[in-house]
Amino acid sequence: MDEKRVCLITGGTSGIGLACAKAFAQAGWRVYTLARREGRVPACAHIQADVTDESQCDGAVRKIVDEAGRLDLLVHCAGSGISGAAEFTPMEQAASQMAVNTLGAANMAKACLPAMRESRHGRIIFISSVAGVTPIPFQAWYSASKAALNSYAMALGNEVRPFGVSVCVVMPGDTSTGFTDARRKLTSGDDVYAGVIERSVAKMEKDERTGHPPEKVAALVLKVAGKKRVAPQYTVGVGYKTLVALARILPPGICRYVLGKLYA
Image (tube, rainbow, N blue to C red; front, side, top):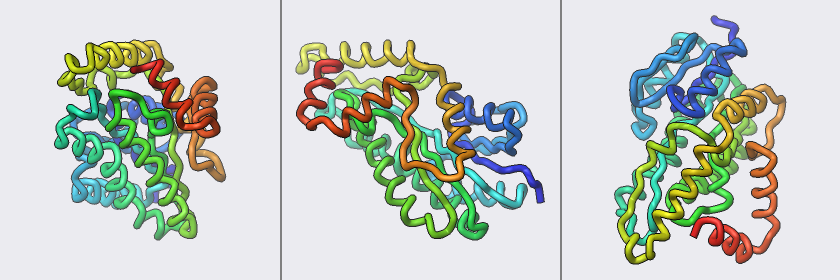
């Protein structure tokens, strides 16, 4: 059996996932990347699969365990984003957002847990978002998907702790990746909202393009992976740590007012 620690990184061919794959490979891990499309990352094995398909997730993890003999870590980076007024968002788009960002994470966790429980060892790190704590206007469904992921991770962590498995989330703020251009922008209703949707999303995307590099997120993920014990949540960057801390202690009305001034 290969004695290298083995990790599976979903969404590992672009953005934060790609940065994580490179960081873990350079740190000496045996790295498997998973994504819907083909993609080759140096020193990493790749599996083409869709996180919204439970059977594909199960098959991918079986392949890894068969080949490597173990699975120490899941880093779930796969995700998608939509923006637009909640009122005008088609429910099929909302359902798709939740399916990828929340249920896709659950599919991967379910697939990995049997091997981790059997070995009495494992860690699951979900890439969430500061938006899960500070919901952003005109990104209601994205924010909801990440808030749900945070709650899922918190509950799951308590469930699987007796088996030696730990669970946490890493929450980046604005990050400069291809995620910005890949976002599905829904503009329906912008006339009703007097152009605020377009202006709000444009400001948000400007912040993302000038945000921190994905390598900064990857460095924190690698650090968290090596910890003996993990906290339930980690935030990337001092400014965002302050924002999340304030969101937890300030009255919700004040938080909503500030976010409204920033984005609405």
